[in-house]
Length: 614
Ligand code: AGP
Image 1 (cartoon, helix red, strand yellow):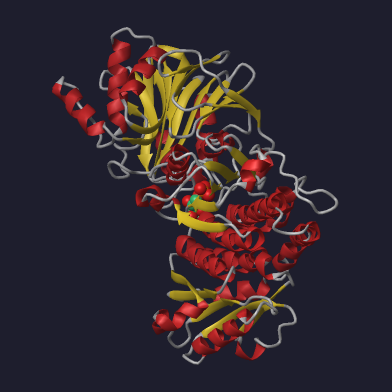
Image 2 (cartoon, protein in one colour):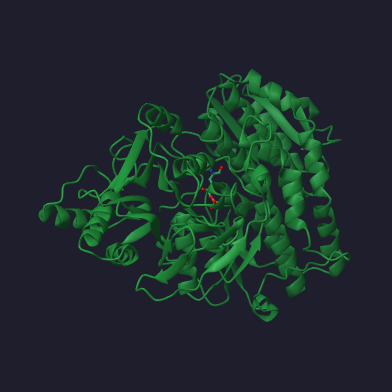
């Protein structure tokens, strides 16, 4: 949500900034803008819509070549997506240009105060209040970094701010509270950005800014302080992936590329986390085993796809550990006054590690003295930094807004955590844990097998390209898979899609079934009580009412054949692990259908990749 980049160095800042904005397009935005400093003045261009509109504006009215610039892609919150509301915002005295990600909660009060002292506002944004405050500070002679600190001390809410001063052509300042910001460390050049993908082309060395810190950046120096001006501790890190991981590599969409990356991503998530004898080793889990043995409740908190991964995890964790496990949508969590004690373990799932709802949920949990384990894909992001321990998913950068490899690797990491807890608490014998672990380790080639057999799914997307409504059914861990299949269709193909527990159908949703409606059914492997047979009955129920049934069942399952209009066979895995193979065809169905409809698969309307506001 909102992409931010700033550059100081010998290159043409405008070009570096525009390239960075393009790499962050996936975050979601509806306007874009750039500002550079040259000849003692600010030069700003900004446009509503895609970066292409900004490119056109720059062609007719070019920016000067200069080594300092800032750029922004905005996802509208306060004020519509117009040219005027796009960032950067310039203080009315012309001194500073400022960009912002987040929400300044006390902006109305600040605006009123500033207007009262004669300041004219040019936009409806909350951001402009910060730009005006900063402009006043520097005009009064305050050093730029100190001016930024003073402004930050007056702001409430979440913000990443980056600013340049017309009178300081070699320096930019940035600040962060509850919103992401990384510094890219180059040789004789430096960067600030919302995420490393913006500058990975130029450097893999980065510094993660902590909460409530201000960074003062020139081409040669980076100085970090807290909001009071005291020198601050920083966390340098080296990015482990390279530019190619942030590019499409011949695929039409990042989403499609990321779907195909899943065997590798799951393998990387499992890598180094189990011993040859099948026992688990989660060295990064710096929570003493004794404390893990004392846990009497687990609460998983997450949003969207990550929440569905949490629902899968519940089945596995409860089955293996016999600890009660709740799964909660993060935005609801703290408002219901959840029962949390010192013996509650909160597990948070987040691909980006910056989701504000999830972050607030874990802060609440930690205030109540719960231990928090983050399962996250983004090194050094806020959520893992604010948790007691982290299991990184190692999926590589996920750029498509619709999460795919994020989901599968979150599920895989949850299995690891569940098995580890079972090992520590002795709720499963070593050979039982080893058997599951070995099966889990064998899933990447099976995911590949699914990817190699997706032609019937592609054909179905063509067949149903004009369809208005699609249903997804599952039971047990197949239920969250159904929810995930429906979410993928909603978010990228803009279709009415619903996922239901198949047994719940007869209590209402079956009324939605009409002649010809496609219904995907995830059939569990045979052998677990009557689960399989119950789902077969559910397929018959919808088929009897005219549904077109697309049945996902394990190979060799002949029992479902008579009831499937299309049968897609899944490799054999045990029930709990089935989401790793069953989700893939549903992801591809959505990707292909959205492509056929001509939609922007990677950047669906109204959505942002990293949702940094509550
Ligand atoms: C999934 O396709 C989504 N776009 C969205 O639901 C996402 O999973 C959710 O916002 C959580 O994001 P996170 O994993 O980065 O916290």
